[in-house]
Image 1 (cartoon, helix red, strand yellow):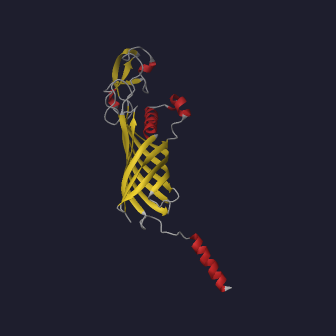
Image 2: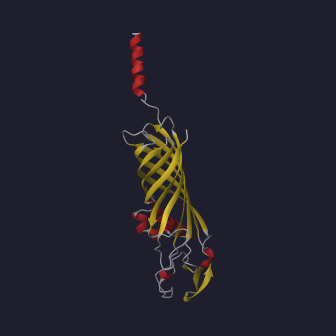
Image 3: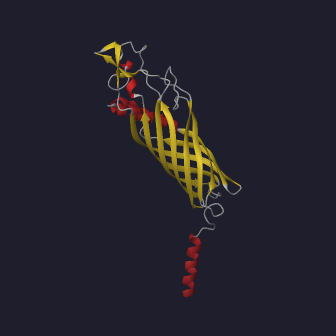
Length: 266
């Protein structure tokens, strides 16, 4: 009877044990850098915007510092810190040199329009904290081979704009404007994105890790309801730039290629 009990415990132990230690050559931690990038056809970038309209070509990119741990043979837990820097174009309105008398000539809150240089965009920066899991395909040992990754991003955004260069009509006279200070010049927001990636990793010289693939991100704050009823949500300058930041982040995060390099730490 005693031998049968011992044999039963041994069978349970074997069935619940992995045949191989998780990680590549026993190393479970990977530290690396990666970049997400994609052409931003509507733009703009952080330094320059088209002076004629809001359409500007730029390269969207996000810098990432990654720490990954092989929790199982085909599963890794991922923690990342990310930084992106991009721009938001100033709105010119739809009037002819802002003198047509249409309310759309003054598209900003408090009946104002921008009077500075349209070549210098609003600066949008974001520091992101990401937590995700990589699932490697059957037959591969993390961190090598093809994988898919699910991730959640907490985004801490900052919008800086030229608050002292706005114009407002004098006593309703649309042909005469005066300088006007709009808002406080900087607003900070919080946002969240849900990310799905697929790619492939390979290891060189048993040390260097190369990672590449495609990444998709969804920002729930921009959806069909907010797009159709955006004016109803804009009650202040802070709300206006929040909406513009959400739109820019959505375009920046939507589809990206990613490429990265790292090393097996321990």
